[in-house]
Structure formats: C-alpha cells, structure tokens
Amino acid sequence: GENVEQHPSTLSVQEGDSAVIKCTYSDSASNYFPWYKQELGKRPQLIIDIRSNVGEKKDQRIAVTLNKTAKHFSLHITETQPEDSAVYFCAAISDGTPLVFGKGTRLSVIA
Amino acid sequence: NAGVTQTPKFRVLKTGQSMTLLCAQDMNHEYMYWYRQDPGMGLRLIHYSVGEGTTAKGEVPDGYNVSRLKKQNFLLGLESAAPSQTSVYFCASSYSSTTGELFFGEGSRLTVL
Image (cartoon, chains in turn green, orange):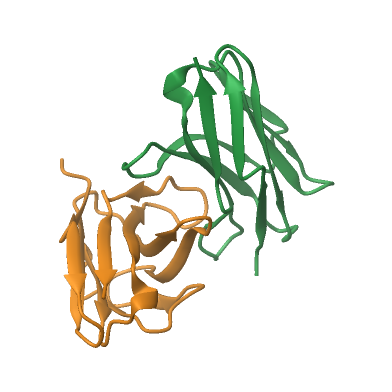
C-alpha cells in the first residue's frame, strides 16, 4: 500500500520568512495530493491540493509542487504570519484506496 | 448545515469497558472514515465505508468495530477498551474516494485508564 513520509517533523521560522515542508510517496499510481492544516485543538482542514497532471499550484501565499518522477511533493508558505502556526499534513491517494497521511509537521512562526 | 458531528467529544473509560462513538454527516456523502490521532503518528485510518451497509479495514483496525446502517451515520465501537486506545478520534466524510476533500468532525478525546 501507499506510504507517505513527511519532513521535517517540526519547523520554526521567523515571521515573514518562507517555510517548506516536503513529502515523498511510494505508490507511483497515486494521483491526488492534498495538504491539510490543523490548528491547535481544531479539526484538520484542506488548504490546497494538486493532481498528478499538474506540476505546481498556487493560492495566495501557499503553493504546492509535485515531482512525479521523484515521487515527492512540497508545500511552500511565503511571508509567514503567526496564524500560519499549526500542524500540516500531506497526503496521497490512488484510485480505489483511502487517503494516506504523512505524520505531520508542526510549524511555529515566531513574531 | 452542521457538516460532520461527533459524539461524545470527551470520554473516560476503564480498561475493559465498551463504548460507541457516533459520527453523523448531513452532506449526503457516500464515503466515511474513522481516524485516530496520536502525537507524532499523524492520522491513521481505522475503518472506512464506501456507502451505506459497507465497511472496510484501514491501517489500524484491531480492537475496533464499525457499522454504517444509515448513509448519514458511521459508528465506531470499542468492545473492550485498552489503554493503547487512548487517543483523539476523528470522523471524516467525502463525496469522492479519489479526489474529494475530507470534511472532519471536531474530534473525540478518549482516555482509557
């Protein structure tokens, strides 16, 4: 089955700097890669996703890139703000199988 | 529109006791899931359902049972709770199994003493 590795497990950045979280996946048939954000004590919520026929997707300060050949994808957050502090989960899915999550990255944005 | 609702939100059990977590969604989603979240372990899938009357095992199904008698409800049961089942449990639903957004409930914190 699919296996998703996520790095780093914790990340601290100064407010205004960029943050990058990386994930690798094992199943070459995986075709959908969402990112979820979980604020402290809250439920995970989808923030951005990318499909396997697209190399990059941006939404304001966040972007996701996908390298199918290397089987890795990354989340990029620019101009970080204190409200970006949260746990971020990457995930991967292939047809007919449920979503598999990485173990999460705790991002702290220091004001 | 309540989305995904879980009950109860908190529960303390003694080892060996049984309990049921209820998940209800009002979005007419076919797919429903139960995850557990433990520190440093991410979200691990316990069981899931692809439609009314169906259930399937996820990554960590041992010690849990589920039922999906109605499309809007997905129940997670612990027949004989163990301390290793202390966790935060999240229910989620989605319209599609392949590319659909997961909508999570608020979570249920279970402590087994």
